[in-house]
Amino acid sequence: MAMKNKRFLFLTFFSAFIILFFSCRKNNAAPTTTPDMYIVGESYTTDSALLWHGGSVDYLSHAFVYTVFVQGNDVYIGGAVRVDGTNHVIATYWKNGVPVTLQSSTSNTYITGMYVSGTDVYAVGSGGLGGGIGFEWNDSALYALYWKNGQSTKLDSVITPLNSVGFPRGCYANGLFVSGSDVYVGGGTNTGACYWKNGIITNLTTAPDTAAGVSAIFIQGSDVYACGSTTVNGYSVAAYWKNGVPVMLPAEANSNAYATSMWVSGTDIYICGVENPVNGQEKATYWKNGVLTILAGSAGSCQGSSLFVSGTDVYIAGTNNGRAAYWKNGNLTYLSNASSVANAIFVK
Image (cartoon, rainbow, N blue to C red; front, top):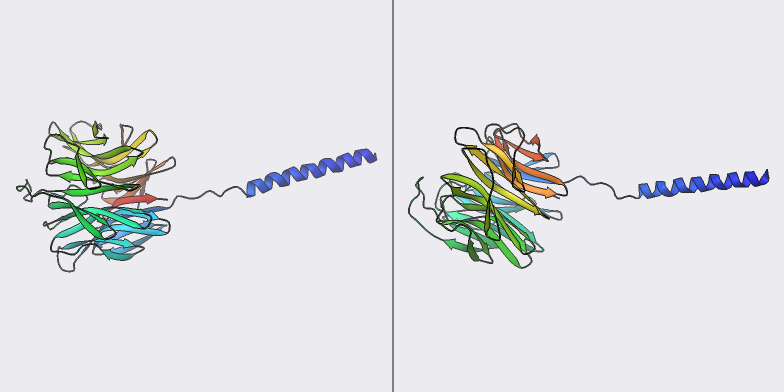
């Protein structure tokens, strides 16, 4: 009987030890983290730039914002501010809400892309004589601009005869990616789509194509990816280029399409954009490895403007039915009930 009691006590102690051991392992497991989204855009009803983050909205009066980049605890937002009482806009970025003016001149200047590497702050954009600004191809832009730590460089400057809307078409810059010591800028010139590597231009369209341009650029290893649009048989066609080789993206029949943002992860290529049927309404679009998906809820004024991949999740910020919105893995969430647009997203 004594031997049975000892054996029972041993098994009881051993079982308790095993339970305690695995309970401790479970409690010490790394906690799951919720992705932190930063989305920037504009409100058309309040004439303000917006930052959506953590369930709240921050406002920047008389401002336009087109890009956001997060490094550690620092949030960088790029765009422009409008001088009170005028249509003059000045390229500006905000670091944690504090504005930094990059260029003040008689020309309009604005930022469309930002990248932060270490202590270096990079930005790209455009400058011109026209009164308006926009994220899409800017026909009033006469030169593409690049800034590093506040110092500006003109990437190109071309003045051509007036185009169909009455403005001279020149150069503009949209996408930006920094890889090591190399700086890549995507954009367009009066002859078509291009990108610059450390200030040296590479043309992506062989024949003059004033409707073609690059909206985003992404570097993976030694491969250079760029996305945007080109012209085929009179239609604007969404496309991407890998090391200069074009790949046309499918669209529905009788539609113009534009690629606005991209991400490359392993062998997967993610792109978002907009499709505009000749006799229909705009639709927000998404391609994964060339397969077209019309994003859920697309109705009225719609566009996928910016794409970010985090793990297995795909985030797209844009506009749906004239309201700022985002899609996570295809599921639609509105950011505003008023007339607004979401231009860029960053997830960490």
